[in-house]
Amino acid sequence: MADGIKVVALGGAGAVGSAAVRLAATLPGIGKVVIADRDIDAAKRLSVDLARASAEVEARSIDVTDSRPLRELLDDADVIVNTVGPFFQFGVGILHAAIETGTHYLDICDDWEPAIDMLEWDCAAREAGILAVVGMGASPGMSNLLAAMAVSRLDIVDDLYTAWPVDVDGEDKSVETVSAAAVHWMQQISGKVPVVREGRIVTEAPLRSIALELPGGRRGNAYVVGHPGPVMFHRTFSLSGHSANLMVITPETVAFLDVLRADIDKRTIDLDAAAEELGKPSLRRMIRAAPRMLMRADHGSLPLFFASATGTLDGRAMRVVARIVDDSPVSGLLSDMARATGIPLTLGLAQVVSRLAEGTISDRFGVHSPESVIDPEVLFTALARLFDRTDWREIVTVESEFR
Image (cartoon, rainbow, N blue to C red):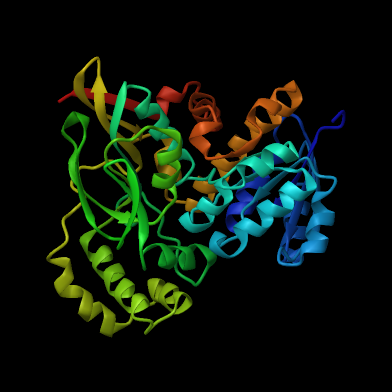
């Protein structure tokens, strides 16, 4: 501890991982960052780029499916940050390794299936004396913290939605090749996904349209996707109504996703092939999608990235929205989803490192979703300072109105 915290960044040479590593190597309290990746050449290049960082940086080759070298790598580490996806393939095994080696853990898990499984390891993590944070990226992650800020304005919470942008102004347009992110997306727009209805978790087909009316007269439609938010919120908050994770998306794109969903569910295309169509749509599927556009409602004036809650305050019905400020630099960050995911992960890591340094981490042992263990105002203040702002209110606004 005297020489600082040792962090192992699994997948640290990838797009999200490198964004996390570049910031982690500058954080106070971190003495060493190990960039562990199957692409050792990329890991070495990144380590050279960071040669003058305040923390020591080392590159290591790792195959996360090989359990013995993975555990050997983690044995003398203090914290893991895991960006190896898709998480429905790799998440649970890596968390298990962290528990076995007694290593604190953060990831960006955005698949609901492993998120449920990993949250069930809470007792094992407590017994191992570790803090694990599942889903500390953009969505889930920042979206969960916005949800916590919205919920804090209510006495009783009925409905809670989080939303992120796909192809509207200011969003990420970088998914052009088959990648873990693209395969994840296909997994989460097919089959059945979890939502909360009347306070209970149920599963349903994705891409259902949800009409929202927010404070300030903002309104429009967004579409259900299978992120872990509803499962997490069901554990954290006492919801009596509905909850889902939503995409703010154009009718054209959601219609094309609906065609892919139908073909994935019929097994006429696999996840990898469907992911490839995101960058190179076939004419046949585009023709099939065309009439579906006419049946899809537009996002209207909805913000790009927000959490919306309804409930009561002092016995009066109220709606609340916590959102990224439209013209803030963080709004621009959403155009690069790798950085929008990796940077919040590292700012969550900063809170874990602070607790380690203060010796106050033991009261947080267990497996947590972000909103239950990460302080929203501390994280958003740190994010604001990265863009030469001083206060979280310069990048996040929370608005409420009685209904």
